[in-house]
Structures are given as structure tokens and as C-alpha cells.
Length: 162
Image (cartoon, rainbow, N blue to C red; front, side, top):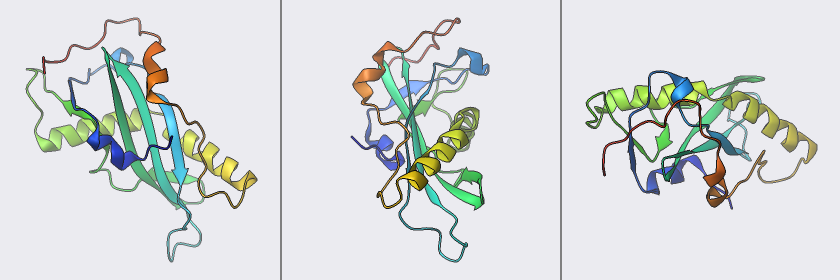
């Protein structure tokens, strides 16, 4: 099964307040990183792709993903920091839906807290070893296998009733 970042917006939405302390976040698991077959035009062979991460929040699987680009050899960044795709509907402190700009900030906090550059580096290493493969996936898990994630020490974040 292959999951691309853009597909996450079709998943059932999950309202969640992202705790200020990332130690209270559930454990996000790297699901897949893909490398595009085409290098970025005019950029000297620099690569691009997308990455997807998942976590279990309560009884729901949430996903977050984005496209990445190589700024220079070995240095990766979000292709568009305003477009991190997720099925999370971020809530504010009063458990009301966040305004669009605040939700973008929350999604970016989540993305920047994950070790995604390592996953991209590993995907590129795998791709280099298996040159000619259409995509390189570091890890390819089925979402139903994520239900056994260890619970963090702190209680799970509280989400508003859907």
C-alpha cells in the first residue's frame, strides 16, 4: 500500500488540540517517504518527494504529510510550509477550530518536531542502492497495524466531541 501526503486530506477529520508540550503528543510513526522520479528542473539533480507520518490519538489514526525538496545536496526543507496535509482539524485552547493561519502554524510545529530529514536521507540511500526503482519507501506500514502504539507517560490530549 502506498500513501502520498496529498491523500491524507481525504481521511476522516479528527478534531485535536495540539498540546504545547510535545512530550504530551502521541508517538508519530514514519510510514513512507517517496522520492520523485524526476529531479528538480534546473537545480542540478536536486531531488524532491513526499513523506507521511501517522499516530494514534484516542481511537483515531491521524496522518500528517508534506512534500519536500532538496535545497542543496543533503539539505531538505518543506516544499511549501503552508501546505502540510493532515486529517487533523486543529483546535484552540477553548476547543474551537483554529483560524487558518493558526492551523498552519500547528501543522508546521508537528512537521518540524518529527525526524523527517533522517527518513528522507534513508529513502535516498535506499534509492541509490536500488537505482532504477520508481520510488523508495523506507517503511511502508498499513494503518491498521498502528493500533498498538505505546502510550506516552502523560495522559492523551483531549479533543472536542465530533
